[in-house]
Amino acid sequence: MDQAEKKRKLILGGALIATLAAVALVEEEESQIDTLETVQPVKTSGTKERARNQESAAELLDVSKLGQRKFSPLAGELFASTTWAPKQPQISLEEQIARAEEAKKAAPPPAPTAPPLQFKYSGKAVTDNETWVFLSQSGENHITKVGGKINSQYRLDSINDSTVTVTYLPLNIKQTLTINNKIAGTFR
Image (cartoon, rainbow, N blue to C red; front, side):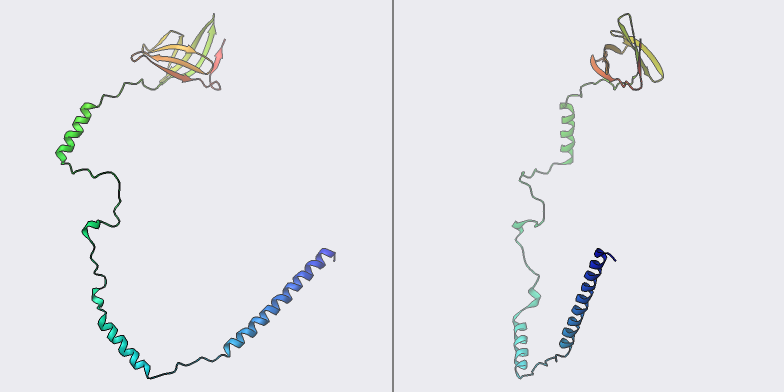
């Protein structure tokens, strides 16, 4: 046996002896507690007087009045949510409908917007200092250069390495198509 193992066995043995000593002490204390005798209450003539006092006190206390508290109606509902905003007067249904119609008439129509781009970038080719872009839309392929039209609704404005910019002609709104260089390539 090496030193570490001897040391470990000594520590475990010491812990075992301490545990046994603690158990013995606890058993001695429990046996002392069991030997105590219970004390019986002494009966006196005062118990009859005490019972009479309790009866007279019960006559003075009217239990039927308990639980019948009255709250002031000015206090309002105790658990209602509160706000600092003043209460709005009640509005009839006809008046609500009339106000809604007025609001519809007064509100300007929303500004027109261009539809989202449905084009997918397929690639581009550079020839004679002109860059041609290959786009597809719903199975239809389009080839155009800067200034060229697509479906008579879009015009190609600019091309760079990461985006293609087009203008939606009916509303003259510019839109940008992001190029994903991993899928499409450049042809020279």
